[in-house]
Length: 291
Image (cartoon, rainbow, N blue to C red; front, side):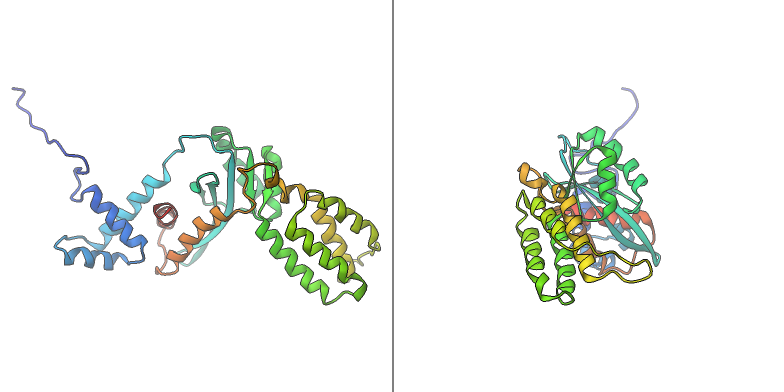
């Protein structure tokens, strides 16, 4: 009666030549390790014509949908870590934020994790919107400043702390006299077990060690380095043991590392990325599709 016609698309079908299911399947095949040309060849073998550039557009489309999903619940504990990629041969620094309650990546920004003010400006709206209270990171000193400026509690990943302390103590153990070996072993045990009152014992050790000065133009002595290591652990003990006071705070930042690891594994098998958007699309697809 109105002299007009229309099309009614069933669920999963839109105006594009591909169905939504086909787009998802093409993106999944790429995520599993096939190149865009291999995905195209696979679909063509089943009488479905699909150009390799269409496959890449499918990857970006699915990744865009994943990247713009807003969590429907408050996020109390946030994991943050930096990652690095390459675009046209040039290094790119990025920083990732993950909901540690579910392991869901929330946002990825092309910023350097070492730039405190930029990271604070990036996280501040997220903290306000989602009600974030706790920040979990590696032992990078800049994250302590970020947490302080945002008014957040800070848990430092136990794995990272144990790794750098063990490495340092192993080096110092070979340089110190026998009389200090028991101190080295005890510090190693405290960092491994993380007793709640470990900071008190560390402070007592710090006071008992002889105060050795460091000459301006000379390398620090092993004893001086041991004393400074103990002092650092003592001052930041609350950041290492925060997880002991609440069940929802993890001791490590493993879920953030896992999201980065999934992307890193796939990125090694591609020739490289031609744009920042392409790099971020690859990350979102790898970090979220297999979760």
